[in-house]
Image (cartoon, rainbow, N blue to C red; front, side):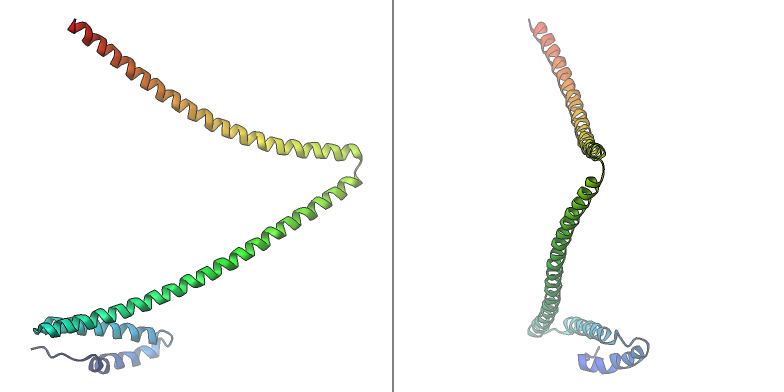
Length: 188
């Protein structure tokens, strides 16, 4: 018959020698590894109790202990997830603040750039400045036209697809009408 060993006995027999060996190699993860080993031993212990116990009350008590421990683990995991969510929300808030600062900086840079451009245009001859302004306006207008052409091309392709669908529907309707006419002729 298998003798049940309590978790403290298992700890003293299994964990301590392995922990000593483990601590030589990896000082940083020792606590985490110890916690994982303890959880695994508790799980094995409870499973062994379930297998060997025949008393219904004992089985229920063991199941209850196991469920309670599992709930505690889930609560701990939930707590850690809530901390991560809270930290993420804090980081998001900081990123939003930085984004607002960047937008403000961009508007400041744009206004400074406009002032510099105005100063440069003032130093140029009147006709040259007007010509530069016309070129800039044409460039912006060209961009708008390219966007409109692209949008128009998309609309044209969409209309072509719709027209093909309508042609197919019209052809199917024509065939159905011919078929119905033939059936009417046969019935007459």
